[in-house]
Image (cartoon, rainbow, N blue to C red; front, side, top):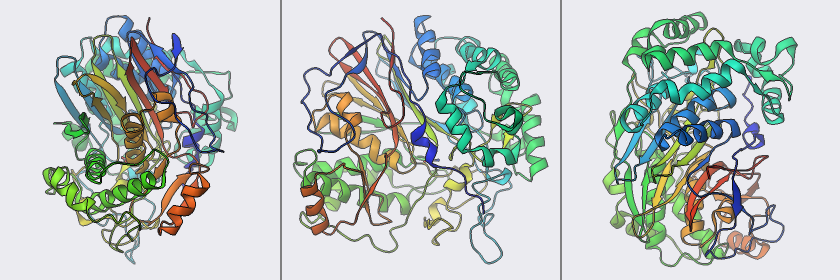
Length: 576
Ligand code: GLY
């Protein structure tokens, strides 16, 4: 059975551009373990007025263009989102969904849930074979798609918090699709590694002309996508959810046995939510509530860490043991208790309370790891997601994470309208209580139901400093590792006193309860710490890069931006 390629996430370029660079001033120098792949003390991109950090330079430039034309961070974020759908097709999308946290300079904040919804014809056991075992139809092909939310999410964000017309913020994306952009080696590599997969569902003529991936240096034009974007620019979200784009989408689904109907598209709705607001050592975190698990799991982890006492020196045995222990406990709750709040009662107040965290923190033995109970649930989420962080010259900020789930989503490319469809249905628990084909066990709370949103790990987060001023905008791609990576960038800055450069280059670790394993980036622990952790009972597995983050942080005189260094290419984008 064909499994889609997953490894290219960390091969993809991250791009941003800078006017000039600076080191993080007034921050502590960091000492990374010997043998760790990155040095500390490097230069971040710096902008006096604004900063955008995304996974693709041309998309960051799209936001830059809009802010320079007088737009705010929301205008720019929408411009980046549409541009990513053109230049970063592995994860940027029209056919997927996402989450956005907004914090305006006047103190207003909002969270937009534009997660996909299960089609009306979806049902609990739709991905089980006649023996009750999960199939891979939740991942590959036409039946894997939820009803896309991205266009509704971005247009609503713009209408509520933006300052420019949709046609203006979409102009850079339309130009990139219509006039083309020069393919780089990263897109070429990504397409090369996905050719077998993408050839199955209609993408070959566009992305593999003559049977080969489009070569670096080639100008890549996407006229069908340009037309779809133009229709959205003219008609707003109804240019996507009704009319010829909707007709093509539904016809494509019908040809391939997919479930999405015109009624599903017409019924799609964005949910405006309140960000989860929490306090960590005097800093305020504004982060994403369900249908993402990200905000609750980060908040619960950090609350436990605070309750557990001093975190220990960054990189020490105590630091790693505490992080592993709090993540393990928060993920046990995540996997068993979280789902779409329209369908299940999610105990948000309890899970994010300091009192609950104190109770859980008391279960951490300072000298021993705690085994995860067998029913602690395991998750295996998709890995091709993308996060971007935007701060404008007025102090407005946007953190957005968007996804097709796995790279190029379900693989289904709708050629007449020029975009890939998501395979987000795999984020549901296909067989609650039973391991699926990837060993995944999740609870009934995340079972499939028509109109339900599948649980996510996406964690767009905005942090305010102790004076309540905008401080950090961060988030990541990487399935469940989004949660641990996003929180570690925050912890590195707050507890470790690191510059943003060091916080993003520091080794990362990850624990998700099951498998009951502490994942650590190769050479990310000193040998002495590694041996101590093993003696304490931790099962350590070393791995390649964990997740893909993009962050912006306030520094004296402006903003620093760092895009994910684990991918090739780094930068940031800023105005004067
Ligand atoms: N599809 C990955 C996530 O939503 O967490």
